[in-house]
Image (cartoon, rainbow over all chains, first blue to last red; front, side, top):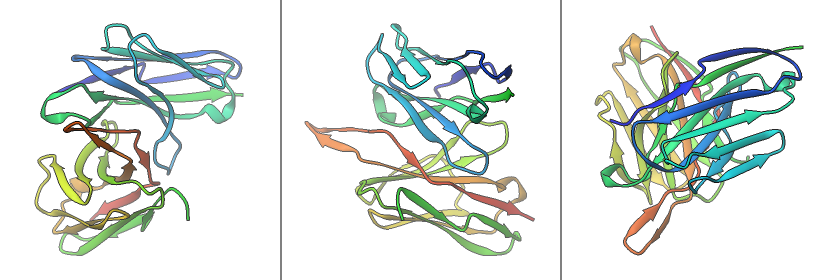
Length: 114
Length: 119
């Protein structure tokens, strides 16, 4: 089956620092999604990417769909304490019998020290 | 209520119990999903319902039984579970578009989850 490698697994940063995380896949995806999960809650969609090379921002968050369609990254600028949580990438299949299914990365646990 | 709601939020059950998890979406979506989230593992897709028909069963043991009576409600019936089934069970929904013989899957919106503990 498909696999997504998300890194880093965890990050400990100071408030105000920038953050970068990425996902790589063993196969091509036609959509990349980035979610954030707060403790005790379900994942919330942050950014959706639909085209290779696409660069999309949502406030202090910026994400890019890699040109090979096998990777994506998420940047958070000027981090604040409420950025704490688990960030997941998810890829949507490009075809075959699993068309449309989401494959999730393992998550990046972000801790922000005030 | 807005978005995707799940009840109960927490459930503790013995291995011989029968219980059900409920999910309701208030977004007018036509597809619903059950995921399992275990510690230090990626989210695992369990079941998918598109237009009330089950289209995916991701090799889930028969002790988990889904039910989708209409496009707004999804249940997960549980019986004779094992301790390793303890996890956060997440429901999600999406508005999938059908056209030209294929389905375009859109972003999934998640509920808050049910934290299940099997003793």
